[in-house]
Image 1 (tube, helix red, strand yellow):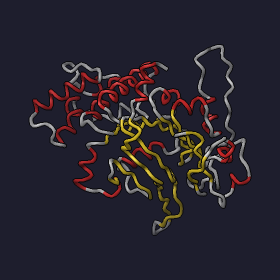
Image 2 (image 1 turned 60 degrees about the horizontal axis):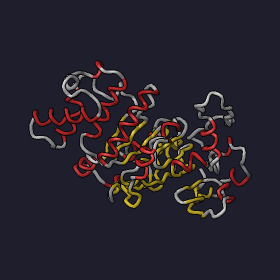
Image 3 (image 1 turned 45 degrees about the vertical axis):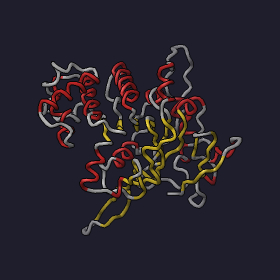
Image 4 (image 1 turned 180 degrees about the vertical axis):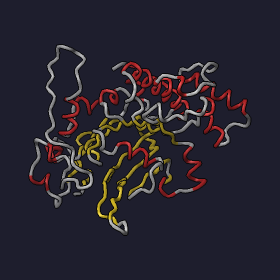
Length: 354
């Protein structure tokens, strides 16, 4: 890790909480019959809590389908209604506001989508795409002012402000399209950006460029990121802290360095063991997880990871005994009974059964 990257990580203001999420649940009802009665629920997100501080990047990782994207889109109110829980952004519960108040709040929260091809309107020029938010929120008074502002944004994200401003999305490569998406996200100078798999659809070399761009913009503008990804090697180099999700719940949260050097949850250990080593001569000993990810419609009782865990005990399988959440070091928490074996561990909560 470079000294520059480490310095950026330390720049986050850990005393100023921008977003505080508590017991967030987002279930999708399954309806059947003539009267469309609810017969089951898909528990996509089931009791998630976390904080994001000013200037901080919180990485969200986990297997596909674990609920990462649902968390981000529920917070932004792109998915309504929420099943339960709260999300306080700068002191305001996002789930309590509507209409003009919600519209004003959206200026402070933006998203970078995963697919740079489908997230841009093919009928709009770059100027229209990037400048749309400026017009909607009344931040520019004329077409000339909007054009000048869009040119500044394009230059900031590494695009040619003169040649590219009048082009359409199909005239760009995937990496260039994602830069347009970044320019659109920062146009309103938000305080929080949800990066929803923002680099997963790009080539490895382009991923590094976009990561460096996001880090530079964060340093310059002081934004916070919720960085959603399934590649742990990508998350490591941009995140101050990392939260590992499994089947709708957070299994472990820790500062990035601590998570990668000493993972405490068996699921996190398995994920990290599967990361390829850059040394071609290094031995590969990945921990192979047995079985498939359980169905979120009918999650297993107790700890949701227990059917695939080599350390599972009887109490891990019981709905009658909540799964404890331990803080095993400052800022490092794990939802696992193994946490009690760590010297100095403090129980800070618990996860109830399915």
